[in-house]
Image 1 (tube, rainbow, N blue to C red):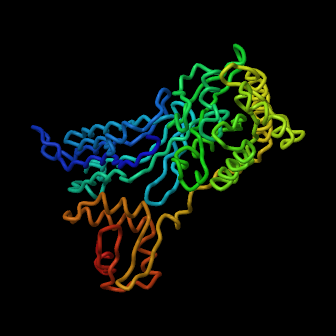
Image 2: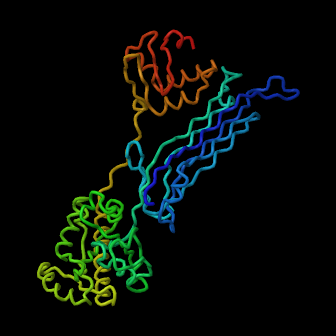
Length: 429
């Protein structure tokens, strides 16, 4: 349950109200229609204590509340309530259709808005002016955003334990932390990643992840390889656990080479992660027979002979892991301090607020602002259509059509709405 596909729908904005003041002794009460409320957002929040997305498998559609409609006496509609969805820390959010990464929630309480609520429409009181004393026009609420997103959880751990099945990773995690993974003397005991906190002393600790055993072909998905390999990507370094006893007929050196090959095939960056080599099951006679050959293979590179069962050699291994982790974090901080920060991107120029595309039928206008303008217009209200024309003119759409050679009768499409281009009618408005 570390992946999920859900649909999110933000709340629609409330409609503005067309209303006029009607009170005794006030014969010419002006417009007093209130604005609609804004629709609620869909917000995802990283939450401590969560490790799976199982709740979203049962609730794959998340909907926020719509904004309330405006009413008379200039009373605005209430804003819709946001829909807050809890996900585990370490969740990556991607748009399902485009595969664009929307956010990577790595810190507890980190939030992201994945679908924005529509803004409320203005009531007719907003359109009163010295030349427009009795506006019978109000805006419709903007529809809230809707999209399908894909969630993927990657465990956040400082160090990952990797190795072939039955190499003793779960036993080592249980030995060094308070984690209680399932342990048995057969492969694939661990079917999901486990986390534990290794405490060197009161103020020195790190998070260790037991990644389920990988097998040949894991980078292609064999043995649930993809589900497990993704969790290694967040770690800063690896402890490569090798079964030195080779009691099941495997060769320790071949296992080491093959697993690194699987990491490289899945993501070449994984092979660049620092690795500490832990040769496990040193308490077994078969392991002693293989130790000299393995030491010769690694040459001057330091390896750590351990027994996860008895605890022999485990403390020096964990202390070295902590020292290496501190070195990596110190180096990362120095690199971050020397990184040149780029100037923030400037907002687009007014000319970039929309795009005009010539088609066989006429012209297509794209862009968030013109789309919002037509969606919030009551197409059956003549005054609303005049207001829409003025909005499009202020955006530069009307002048752009003229410069592009639009002629009487051309079709202009904005979002799902089509209009007939008529300069004479527009000028008379």
